[in-house]
Structures are given as C-alpha cells and as structure tokens.
Image (cartoon, rainbow, N blue to C red; front, side, top):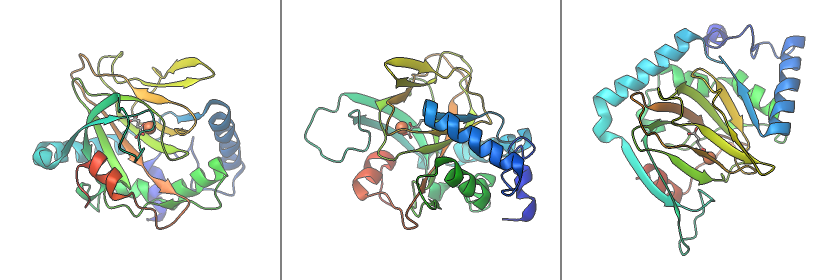
Length: 249
Ligand SMILES: O=C(O)CCC(=O)C(=O)O
Ligand SMILES: [Fe+2]
C-alpha cells in the first residue's frame, strides 16, 4: 500500500498512519475505552466521502454485472450463528445477498483498506488482547459485503469470534429498517445513529445482536465485514462456508 493511502480515510480525525503521535495514542485510548465499556466502538465518518462513493460504485458494478453469481443466502440458525452441530432446533432465520472475497477485484479500494497495515495495527492496539492481528486467508470470508434488500434481516445471534469489523457503506432509506441492535445489561440498544462511512468494531461473542428487517426501504443496507484473526493462517471450515456462502471455494 502506498504511503498516501491514509488519505483514503479521514486521517485528520483518525491518524492511523502516525502511530507514534499523541493524537494516535489518544484515539487508541478513547477507542479502547468505548469498545470495552460498551462492546461497540463506532467511528463515524471513518471513510472520506470520495472513498465511500468509490467503494459503492465498485459494489454497484458487481451488483449490476454479476448479480446472478452472487449468493442469496437464506439460513436458519440458533443464537450461536456459527454452531456446527446439526441436531437441534434452528429457530432463527436470516437472509441477505453476499459478495464474497473472491468476487471483489484485487484492485478494489475495499481490498486496499482491508489489507492496510495501519488499520490492522490500530485494531491490534485498540483490542490489545492479541499480540498481532492478521488479515484472514479465507478465500470467501476474509472480506465480504452484505446486501440487505426487501424482507432481508439478520436475526438474533452471537458470533464465534470475539470481534468483528464492519464498514457501513449504505444505510436503508427508511430509518426504521436495517437497524443494528444489541443487548447489554438486559437493555436493548438500537444504533439509529449509525451512518454510511462509519467503522464499527463490535464484541459479537459477548453481546447478542441483530440487523432488523428491511420492510419498506428503497435503498438496500450495504456493509462490508472485514475479518482479522490472531492466527496468520485463519480459514473458515467447510461447514460454515457452505452454510453462509453456499459453496466451499
Ligand atoms: O451486517 C451487520 O451489520 C452485522 C453482521 C454480523 O453480525 C455478523 O456478520 O455476524
Ligand atoms: Fe454477528
């Protein structure tokens, strides 16, 4: 990644490129405090407006040109989304369209941001539990885009992984649709404040969460999930790939 790539994000508010600076250290302190105390770190306007619109153009190009190759996922699951035992009631159901990692071009801005070392360092510094984080080696799940259209939703669940990184790319046009909600201390938290361009770091193992159904929105909700792991050779197993991406490679 070139030295100027920090200008893809709002580097004045988020000086990820300058790990030695006081401003960087303050950002990490604040981010860590928010992540630990609320389970959810939200960095509004993380992407510049130019980066955001370029990424949305990349995604709309894929949607317009290879929609038939994309996986329209409908899954039944338990509260534990990635549970791999098969003999219990899977009472929740979720549906969305997925653009998998191998369907996102090598040259895309989204891939650039995903593999940007300064972002990985920032996440490592903020989470602190792992000595290092690595981008995933998974051919489908390393980085993928969720598209929530009419009647799509992601039902209540917890994740296997301690954290996920979510780039918000487009919110539903109806403000009650496609809301990220989670439960903490018996309270329901509805993040109606989330806006396109923001970055979310969420502790999905501890806090049950969901994306509410799209009822009447003309615009789909679009977001990218960036998968990082403490192991450099991270890959999803075939059961999870088949269930969530509809294929194994
Ligand atoms: O799409 C979202 O905003 C949430 C994604 C999520 O919870 C997950 O992938 O486990
Ligand atoms: Fe989740």
